[in-house]
Structure formats: structure tokens, C-alpha cells
Image 1: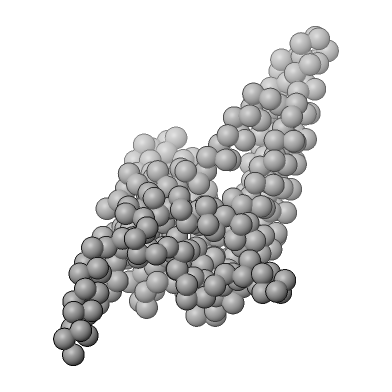
Image 2 (image 1 turned 45 degrees about the vertical axis):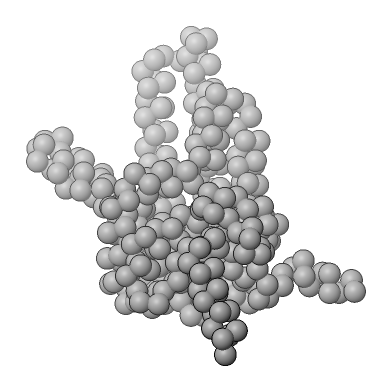
Length: 331
């Protein structure tokens, strides 16, 4: 009995829905909160499993942040010396300039190191996108086996996506620096500078749709890119809102670090704990809930036989069942 209880806790009951037809959610807002309540413990386990692939990236980012914190302490010491009259303003400005140059160099180095670190995450992101897609529309998915199956089925397109994702920040940074320096002498070069930044932003918005498209539809990669770009632009306000929503924890941590500087290390530890325990999986769950609705509205209605509004109450299903029941009675 105990073994069955543990299996049910970890794997769920395959083929059995969470609702009867009479109490299905009637809108996507209800569906989201109900599925989040039901799948919350599963999201914790899924996040811990997914975090393994992000360890190299976390180490690289942590290294950069630790150097930044150390540098801020050094600058604070220089500021104290300046206030005490122990150093001149020119020396303080020179040291601050050297610090900023060192941070720029370290930041570029971090971007380069993040390219392979992010590139390896693509297949696993496809796995978590598949599981959260199913959970968000009240469909069953095993945490481990379906995660691995989704990786095997989509690893090529997912890997290509993550390689591009790893390259984009470095390309945007280099182009922005290069064209920015040229724009100081010729304002015309502001045009390619802005275009590079816009392309980086568009790719960031496309990522909302790319992995759900990869695990949901059997399309060539160029068609996946085209659909992701069209959806990102067509749903621009919502795309921006979803992307900004995923940055809320980091933004809160940044504000707290700025206002509570002595507690910066503790704040960063709390932020790291959030992402290690739940942050990535919850973000994917929110994205999946949103993209399910978008795909139903723009893609599934154009596919003959495609099911829409999964997990929601649909009166047409009741009418269809009533017709089947009447036909069976007549027979």
C-alpha cells in the first residue's frame, strides 16, 4: 500500500483527469490557478531536475557577481578615503575608471563563457517545456520519462535554439560597442546600433514561443522561427509582459541590493535559492499556460481535427456526447 501511495505521489495516475466534466474550469484564468495548485509540488521536483543543466551557467554568473561585489567594496573604500581627505578627487576618478574598465572586460569574458553554458541547456528546456505544457492544460505527464522522451524527440531543434540564444547576448554587446563608438563621430551608425539591440529584444520575445512550438508541432526549423517571430510581434504587449514577468524576482533583488547594500550577499543567496527551488519551472509553467491559449487562437483553429481549449469546459463536447448516447439507444 505504501509503495502505491508513493508511486501515485511521484508519478500521478495516468489516464485519469483531475476534474469531472461538471467541474472543469470555464476560463483559462481558473485553469491556470487550479493546475498550479495541483502541480506545485511537481514543479519543485521538475525544477530541481532541470537545474542540473544550468550549474555551469550559474557558476559563471556567480563568478561575475562576486567580482562585482568585491569591486564595489574597493570603491566604497576609496570613497571613504576621499571623504576623509586621504586621496584626491583625481585619484578617485582614475581608480573608478579603472574599475569600470575591468568590469567591462569581465562582463565580455562572462558572455563568452556563457555561450557553451547556455547552448547545452536547449534539449532539457524542450523537456521541461513539454511537461509544463501538458500540466498547464490538465494533461498527464510523467516528470522523468516524458521529460527524457521530449529531449530525445526534439534535441536537434532545441539545441540549435539554445546555441543561438547563447550567441545573441555576445553579438548584441559587440555590435552595440562597435557601432556605439562609431556613432560618436557619425550619428548614422546609431541606426545599425539600434537595429542590433532590437534584434536581441525580438529574439528574447521569440523564446517565449520557440520551445512550446518545438515540442507541440512537427515543423521545419525555419517555420518554427517564422511562427515564433510572427507571434512575438502580433502579441507584442503580451509578449513583453510575459518576458518582464519572468524578470520580476531578479528586478526585486536588484532594487534590494541597491537600497540594502550591506545585505547584498544574503539577497543574492535568496535569489539563487528561488531559481534553484522553483523559479525556472514556474516561469515555464506560466509561459506554457500563455502559449497554449495563443496556439489555440492562432494555430490550432486552422488545423483540421486539432483539439482546442484543452482542460476547459466545452458545451460542444456535451452536445456530442448526448448525440452519441442517443444514437446508441436507438441501436
